[in-house]
Image 1: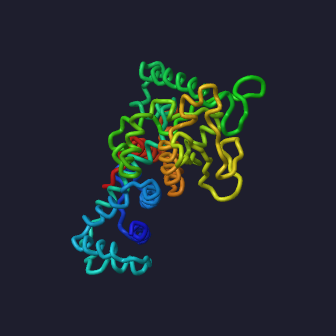
Image 2: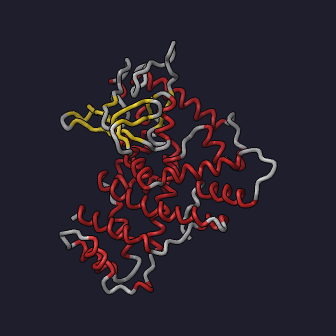
Image 3: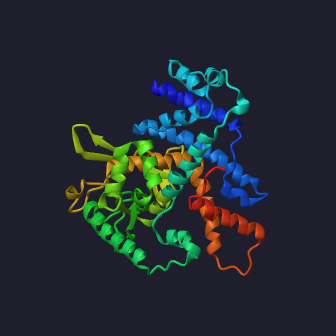
Length: 366
């Protein structure tokens, strides 16, 4: 039944393209630029659909949450949703017909669904695209006044250096993706890569939605392991950059006979055979080997599997829905605000300001 309800949800969200999705209030300042507001509506709907699929894989309850919000939208929907639950087959036309049976569309209020979609964009999409690095501090500090030498920034840098040392002890002194040695002649510098952005552990709404998407164990793992060796690995810089853009992920498979034995696989979201993780050329499904350092066994021979699979699911949803590309553009527009310009044209200032408001979490639907 769960799989069938998944398909029913996809059908409803496909039909939802015709719904009157409102624009987010923070985009009001864009004025005549309706393209971005329209794109936001499309991205939100697709992100909701993609996250429902990922939640199903992870054993989460986002599907149930979606139907709960649907039932709030019209008194008849509760009965119609129950009818869908007892329909053992799936047909797009039949699903939509059953869904709207005896429903006065003039009084339907889909705001609960709109708010769920916007919340997922705000509390899942944005935090998983933003990292605790220099760019993050410049972008999110008020008026970009936060100095790189503040105690908070220094604490972050010190923690990162300590985790990098531990990761090298666990995984060895070569890149797990390219096997190119770190340092030395012809080598590369190791770059610390976080699987789950460590700032997420302090975001209550994001943690709540992680619990909905992937279950309480995933949420508790984020709280417990975000600032530990279980949440990081080192790679060459170009690989880190592509990971931050949610171009690929790591799938972790535990051995059913030995939960301490985990195998990691490179997973891309593009079609085709060969793919690039930065400058490294890989095939989808290539095994990535961690734990080759002198203290590999001491640190479970690799990052935590729950964190890997959570990030894989979110990254795939962000990429497939178009949200990753959309947010990257917003971050680019918001970054323009930090440029030292003599003058900024009014329409450009509005775009930049709107991007900053949206990125800072004000993506609620009006």
